[in-house]
Structures are given as C-alpha cells and as structure tokens.
Image (cartoon, rainbow, N blue to C red; front, side):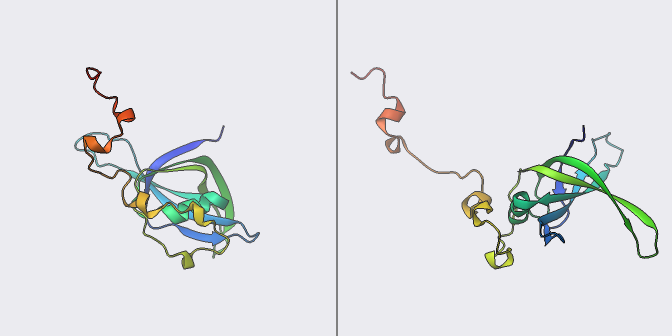
Length: 155
C-alpha cells in the first residue's frame, strides 16, 4: 500500500500551473519536523514536494500560505528526467488526495490572479480565514426561552 501522511508547513506560497495535457496542478514544498529527540539534540526537518491536482489544486492555491500548518494525505510517486548535463535523475513527490488546513494564514489573492476555470466557491470566505473562532458577546436576554431551557422552578 502506498500511503503517505505528512503534517508540516509550506516553505512558500503555493505555485499553480497547467500540465501539457491541460490539468491544473498546484505545488508546494512542505517542511516536516522530525520527532523531538532531546534537549541537546538539534531538531531536523525534512522537505517534501507535494502536488495537488484539479479541484484540490484550486483549494490549495486559494487557501494555503507560507507557514500555515497543514496535513496532506496521498501517495509517494517517483519520476525520472535527464538533467542539463545528460545525467539521469529521479525525483520523489507526494501526490495529494486530501488536504487539511489547520491555520488560516492565506493572503487574500485577487480573483484576477486565478485561472478563469477556477471555481470561486472553493475559496474559503474571508470571515473564516480571519479567525476560525470569533468571540461574540451575548447575554441571557439574547437566548430564546425555548433554547435556554428555562428555570425548572418556574411554573
């Protein structure tokens, strides 16, 4: 089974492109810390290229930002190419199937920057990205009687 789960932070804002066959894809470089080993041992970080396709690419591009904690679930894929001097090279990428964004640090990209085929509904509303949890002040008078449960001693 080829299953990869990584949690980390993009090292820069996502890049979006189209493949030769017209598929929209988005690429990020994900920094993933290794487990903590002790007080005097420096923490190590691994870097992975993550590729999102189609609608997930749009979601990643529209809503991820450099430094935003996210979790990616996908598969590991290798590809080969010939470099400038003629040497055969191999690269590894995570092809993402799922994305969970834990921090909303997205820079609000203007819609003009997005591909005309993008679905605007895949952009998370600014109200959510500003703060997932907003504090609101309410009083007892703001709660309807049927929801407040009433006083069990009132008849």
